[in-house]
Length: 432
Image (cartoon, rainbow, N blue to C red):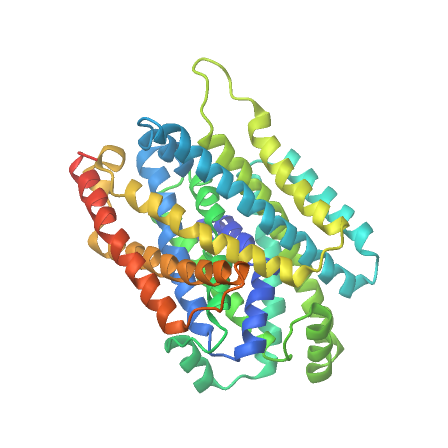
């Protein structure tokens, strides 16, 4: 029962990253490239597990969550002001972008399921999220979301299994990395929708009072199950031709599997949207509470936490009432999160190698450092690819070739590797 409780508790991480953004990005990948990009979800699931374990272990070992550790260990000179504010702004903006996609996608699922108006459903979803966030705590909300994640997983996995993909194609797509033409942006989105930067603050913030062994078990099972659900969504996406639209995907499933498949997809999308619409503001509040400086001797104001999640929630409701098209907005939010991820992952890598924070026994081992370094390298590489394309497009220039982009991004990684390696070694020696 303890282990089951841990899995349900840590399902909040799955609830956060399996939102309409995951449904949209993974289903778009399936619609455009079949099963060829399953490997990106395998990688991003493992990367999510590595980084979430590190952020939670940071709290258990040091007694400080990720935001507090960043504020404390990067407090010298101008960095003490710039770093926390930059990270907080990045997290809150990322949460707001994500929240817009959460509510837009969740309402799209509710429209398919109920036929009610978007405006009414957006307001209802906003009120439900507001009520739970106002009355709940950072420990009660995750438990409430456990059942929602279970329903969501059943909906998408059952639909994927009924589509009957070939086992050999599943294995090839999962184990053989490929980048078909036009896929780098989607790969970035798949990573950004699974390894969500704000989840690192959320996971670290709710890890207080946990035992490391139990925490690792619950987190591992919850994240892996979340990754499997995301892969099921990609398989579901192979049932429709691009460009992806929720209604078209529902109709395609209905034509191939029956009316039940369209209804199950609609309710699964609604569950994904509602769960993530609660976790994104929750994470923003946790990050604000830990990153912003406190006045010694004065109690912490609850509006530091509530004001942050309220801003994020209202942003999502505003986009929903404006009836922005959900699919483009959601994919843009995933790419934004993917660009922010390397910065947060790099800070985390430095912190779990800081002997003054973690002690000799709590420091990252060689295997963990290798895994985290690989995550940072891949996210920097993909981020550089997409930023280069965006700059070229904004300037009206011809997009650079894939080979030139890869060489430029690889050069950037090599330039950053030396100072990053030196910073890690200095912190392990206690001289950083």
